[in-house]
Length: 251
Image 1 (cartoon, rainbow, N blue to C red):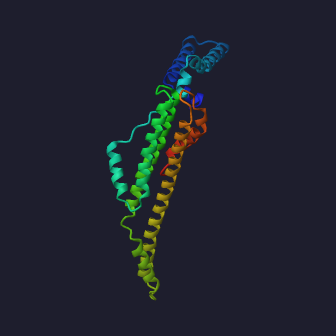
Image 2: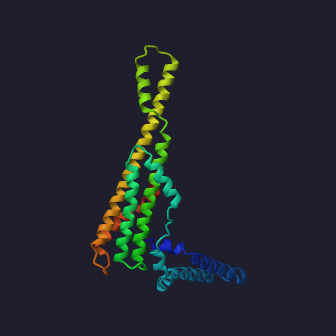
Image 3: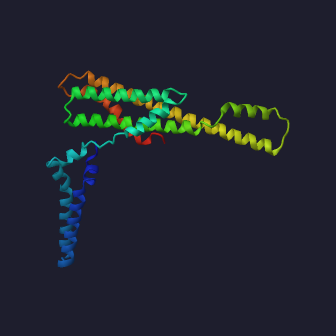
């Protein structure tokens, strides 16, 4: 939900009204050249008109609609999803592919339960669905980053590096080429390690997403048909908090 002032500022007619109001006051001052007292009155009236604008938006229901408007979340391109599936299934690590399958299943389950508990035209329905989709999209983005990270280290042979470093460690020579090789080998090993840390972090974030989707689905399933999902609020708040952090994923 947007704060009221963000909703007002993001509403295009607000800027149109502000422009008209400002131009009117400026025009009256320029044309009639009123005394200072009258200028103050005009500015005061303009400020009063600006202050009543949010009240007018609220009275007409516009402010509420803007505050609770659900942002449109784009679906993932099916072709991208197929490509991601193939990439993850080719990995030695089975967790990413398992997460992808689980994400799809859990989102589908949530949508089915949501459809049976709420009317598709309700604002709450749209809110739950959009938030779940945002979390789902963020988790898919994480898996795309995982695939890229694994590809980036696929050519780094850790066993070769460790073996070669061990060989150099037993070499009694103390020349510059040995030091340079040890340094480059160490750099490659660190690159692999940093990418593995990144992968672990992204997969951990996805596990949190899976848990939040499960919790929300279960909470909705416990709501009697036709009743408002007050009991699911805490689960939904956790899901929304996770969605709010979606922009920080993979960073």
